[in-house]
Length: 290
Image 1 (cartoon, rainbow, N blue to C red):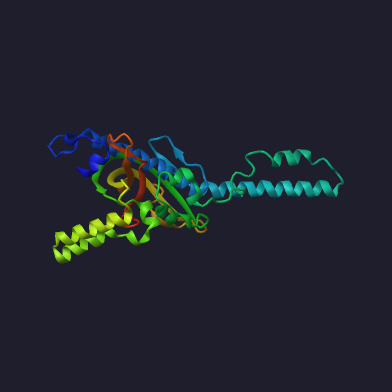
Image 2: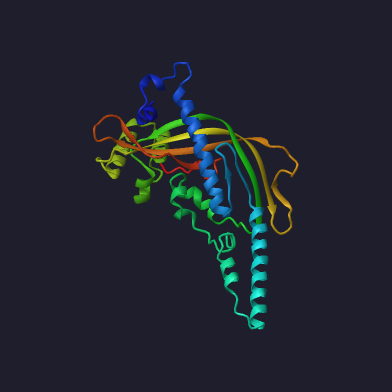
């Protein structure tokens, strides 16, 4: 109920009264859409190839990058040979070759430098930096990824609020990381409510009594129809995933989202920030900061 209040939901909308709650379905569907958008941008940024995204299915075949690079290298070698021949023959008619070299389709991949994921503002608006860091060092030259993902359904699994703390506050004050875990451990060991109250007040003092920010964390189960295959770029051997002729499989992803809320100036409800993906499939064990 506290998390619902942070999202400006009415009390009767969050009470477990036994009937379907439309806001849960809407939030879960929005999460599924956000998951697809983030995955699409991540794949495009990591592999530096176009990703098909029709807002239903996200698909990529990174082997196309290597084929295109080979074609471009061949074109480049041909152009260099033509220039050498013309120089040897004493010709100076190289304008057409220079013009061709300036056409947009010549250096689509070979001239692109991989931008650090943490510098991709759009991607960082959707995903936490700790999750992005796991994909920064993917060796895209040694593997070929073939992936097609179609989200088919989504369900809200958990929703809870973290008072006082946000990820930004913890980054600024690293000593506060795990503060609630320490309070929980203290209660398990002492069963003392007084001790819990004391530690909570101390936490509020450390954060600052003038801070009204809180964190809401949500977990969504997103069901997808997927084709997934990873090949060794050199040998073509399948390292992970399915064979070429296999049909799409049903795969369940657990995606964890996070948003920061704050007190509104008019005192009516809460200001709700932008939801971010902070973990999926427990890659970061929940990416817990509190």
